[in-house]
Length: 270
Ligand SMILES: C[S@@+](CC[C@H](N)C(=O)[O-])C[C@H]1O[C@@H](n2cnc3c(N)ncnc32)[C@H](O)[C@@H]1O
Image 1 (cartoon, rainbow, N blue to C red):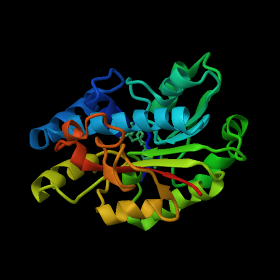
Image 2: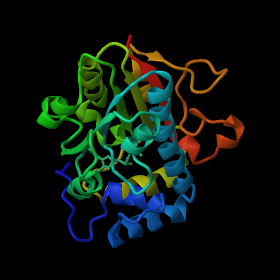
Image 3: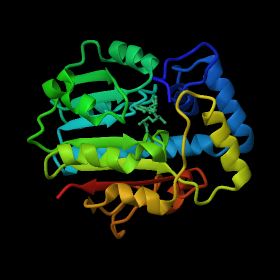
Image 4: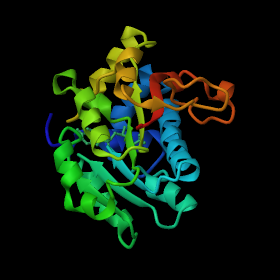
C-alpha cells in the first residue's frame, strides 16, 4: 500500500466515503468510482449512512453515559457530515479528539476544519504504526493515557490486509489505553454478499491506494477478544451487531441491506 498520496484521477476512499454521504469533499475520480460501485451495489449509500450513524451514536453514548472525555479517531476521513469533535461538543465543552488519517487531503481539510477549535488536532499517519500515533506529540498533548479513552476504529480495519495482522494492530491500541476505555469498531463483511457484487466493490477499491478487504463475522469478533462487549441496544444481549442496529431507536427499521454490509460493536476494556 502506498502512503495514500492523492494522484490526479486516482479515487481516494475518504473522498468516496464523503460522496456516499452527500458531502462536498470529493473529486471527480472519487465520484466516478462511487458511480461505478452503485451500478452493482445501490445499497452502498445506505451502508455508508448506517456506518456513519454508528460512529456518531457510539461517540455520543461514550460521552453521555460513560463519561469518556477524550477520543482517538483513526481513519477519521473527516467527511462533510458531523465529525467526532462536533458530537462530543454537543455533550461536553472540554472534550479532546485526535484525528488520524493516511490521506493527505484529509489532513489538509482537517487543519482548516480545526483552525480555532480547542482540544482537537489531526495527524498524518498509518493505522499500522501504533507507536507513531500513540507517541505523537499532538497525541501526548491532548490525550491523558491514565484516563479512559474512546478508541474509534470505524470502517478502517478493512484497509489493513491479513498480512499486516489487523488484530495485532487493534490490540496495540487497546493495550495502550487505560482500564475503562472503550473500543468502537465497525468493519465490512463478506458474509452476505453475492460474489458478483462483492467482486465489483472490491475491484473499485483496488484502484485506490488503499484496497479493501471484507471479513467474516468470526474474524470481526476477534477484534474484541479480551474486552467486554456492550449490548448494541436496550434489551439485546452483548454481541457484535449489524452496524445500523447499534444504538438504534427502532431496530427493525434500522435493519437493511446496507446495514448488513458492516458488523460493529462497542466494548469496554476491563
Ligand atoms: C471509510 S472512511 C471511514 C471514516 C470514518 N471512520 C467513519 O467510519 O465514518 C476510511 C478512512 O480510513 C482512511 N485510511 C485508509 N487506510 C488507512 C491507513 N492505513 N491508516 C490510516 N487511515 C487509513 C481513509 O483515508 C479514510 O479516510
